[in-house]
Length: 358
Image (cartoon, rainbow, N blue to C red; front, side, top):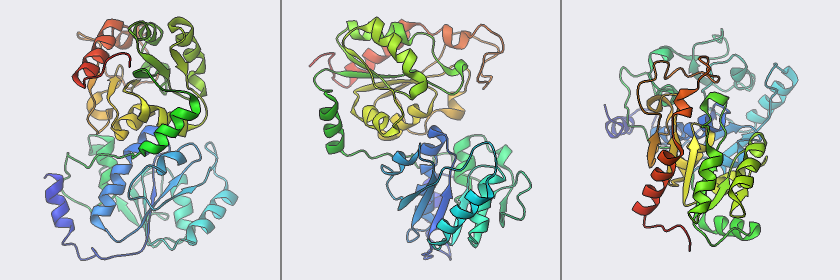
């Protein structure tokens, strides 16, 4: 089945004209949060007249502002390591104000279902897991049989089906040109062709080993190099700045909106398998993804990117999908040469007719 065929069948469903709002509870990691915009698009194709709201943390909230077809983000920071019943009750009171007719809960955790249940949302959809039978009332099975995370996410936006499409609608982040221009002006960032580097990732095994050398090589070729990431990447950004010189800028920090605008403004983005890879791809920026311990088929953005770079040859332990290399050689990242990445970057820019300096 392809998605267009599925979409045509959804248009004939008896509940097509439902109008009550839907609450989406996505994963709160940046990349997974972006991926869940596909779920928004599927929900709107299924129920075009139902507003879709997204529960979000303060960290991910800026993403919602650029997601088309989302009515609003409900910003609420629940504690990560424990269940706070007072916080859950307060969130439930906030949700009751919206009159939701349905909730779609992506995470497979007990905690993620508490507030929708306390809020009395009539239909609460999610996969079976962590003894949530009383909190969900539209239980789904077969999560582990679905090959990709995007399949597991999007399946919950649909009625139970014997077959799912592989060609889901792509996530979208629409960043206005005027906002990008204002951000560049405010930060004094204009003039040269920009390559943005995103050296961070959850777990050291997913971080390519040679961003310092790549940043230096790109700066020497006449590019402006921006280093994007959270505060955890600031130390690496400083290494890249020191090696690359005055045309390398450290743009790491705590504000994700700054990162979104930088990715939208860059001429090319080079990123590990990380949240920023998904942000860049969903924006539509030219993007190169560097993959080591994780499988691109499972975890690359649904959006098309310029290229996926992996270490050559047979590495028996790849993919391990582990955050730390258990073999202690990290060959899946160390065997990716600087020249392989810079050559791919130059090829992508040349194909777009972009020269190093303005």
